[in-house]
Amino acid sequence: MPYPVTRLRRLRRTDALRGMVRETDLRARHLIAPLFIEAGLHGRAPIGAMPGVDRLSIDEAVREAGELEAVGVPGVMLFGIPDAKDPEGTGAYDDEGIIQMAVRALKAAHPQLVVMTDVCLCEYTSHGHCGLLTEAGEVDNDPSVELIVRTALSHVRAGADVVAPSDMMDGRVGAIRAELDAEGFQDIPIVAYSAKFASAFYGPFREAADSTPAFGDRRGYQMDPANGDEALREVLLDVEEGADVVMVKPALPYLDIIRRVKERTMLPVAAYHVSGEYAMVKAAAVAGMLDERAAALESLTAIRRAGADIVITYFAKDAARWLQT
Ligand code: PBG
Image 1 (cartoon, protein in one colour):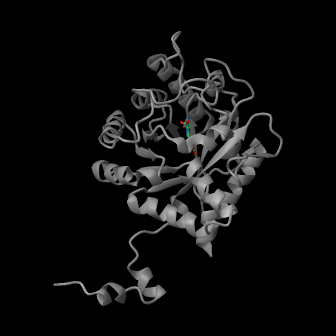
Image 2 (cartoon, protein in one colour; image 1 turned 180 degrees about the vertical axis):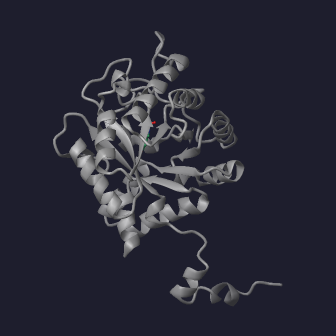
Image 3 (cartoon, protein in one colour; image 1 turned 90 degrees about the horizontal axis):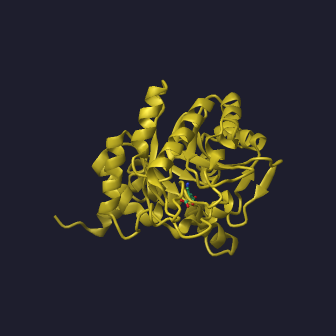
């Protein structure tokens, strides 16, 4: 039977009708807020390329987490900016490191908050790469995995509820799982950054976390934006190694990947709406070119519609507030 235009429109006549047939919902409970925590900082320090996002002291992070909880955002993803860096990224797996101290403070103040930590070396290495380097300046996979495992364990010992390895070394998910199990942390889930593309949209983050590679780029260990099948293969490897949640990053340019990952794995899928995606909306809004609230909520809804269960976004607090009204 043909589908007349009037029939398509019948269910759009009122808010109640539209609400009744809406396929996707976006709620505060789906959102995770990334927080940048800087050692030695007092108060907050604005991040130029990310208007509205600040680097935080531990005290400010605790305060921010309280505000997030109050609007219904269930969790945070922590990134650390250490006071010193070295070629081995020792600040990442120091039990008294910035993330370890922040996790303890956050869990003490907000026991219900889901505290996830980004597990990577790039914020802690003097060269800004995500692992150790060989003499030739290439990332050395296996010794890097050992340090990534130490970092994850140290976060969990500090009280992290979830670890999220973002380094992209081969075999790190399985290695982290084995170590956590051996140390009695069988209950701690791993959110794997599985399909992580080598993206220009990480630009503002690298300013925020001070993690721009001193030379070269990350194309040796992050994925080519042109490749979808390869993304699926990476995801399936992480699933085999024991990932509990798989992540696609960035989000909006990769909605097709989110959908394919969801259909293929049937696991909870996280999507990281990254710094550049946030900055685009902010910059256009500041210039009066678009409506920030409408553009942000539309973006987050589209990411959910594509198949993401969890959305990690710098809009988390604002979006949660907008969804309340
Ligand atoms: C690296 C990491 C990056 C992001 C999250 N974890 C940057 C990178 O790979 O260069 C980017 C997040 C964002 O842009 O918001 N460990």
